[in-house]
Image 1 (tube, helix red, strand yellow):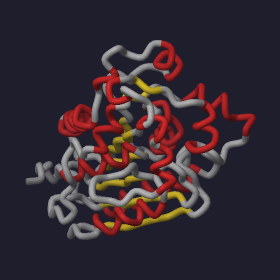
Image 2 (spheres, rainbow, N blue to C red):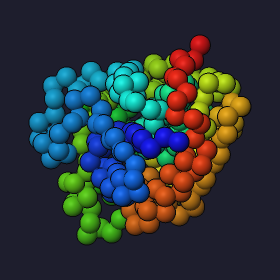
Image 3 (tube, helix red, strand yellow):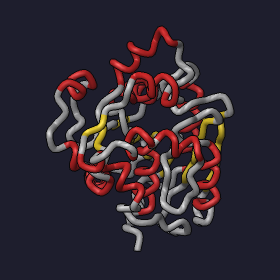
Length: 268
């Protein structure tokens, strides 16, 4: 059984967002790796003040290849746990035959899956901003408080924004729109077991979209399951009660992981 976990963050966040989950899993005896996206490996405050000038050119394929290379360099196949856009990356990595098991938490839109109105509204700050496909974008504090993490008390908004939020290349949104990474092979026989987790009050990745992904992914022969937490937002792995979600994700992945000595097979 694998004892290695890789955590994959989404847009507007970096590895700092995994600090609680990483510490919790390490306390259980796992080796936990939480790499940031390319050019995002600094503190959120530093990234907001001085984003790398080339960050604007980072898209989904560069992010995918970044994690692909890191996974293939590990001594054993890891459990992959991704949040938001990281949940989409996780599904693409599984489609490449990587990972012993995968968990996609509040996954962002994936090619071939219908997107709901609330999710569409959450993309407006990027898609309605001219030139965003070649710019580094910054999330507003209002968007953070009302759509990204609407369950947190108003008094905590600035503290949590300052602690975790980073600039993001608009390119990743446009790459998703044009399916730059290609389509996932839903019936892929090389895909490891997959758990999809959604939040009933998520305004970024609506739970009905997660349910639709499950409908697609269960075409694969490996085990595929769905868990919806009716009262949780997109901020589910940091907002109060995150431990319940983190523990369920890990327990499922450990129980269903394929042998860690199975070599990665790139999907045809």
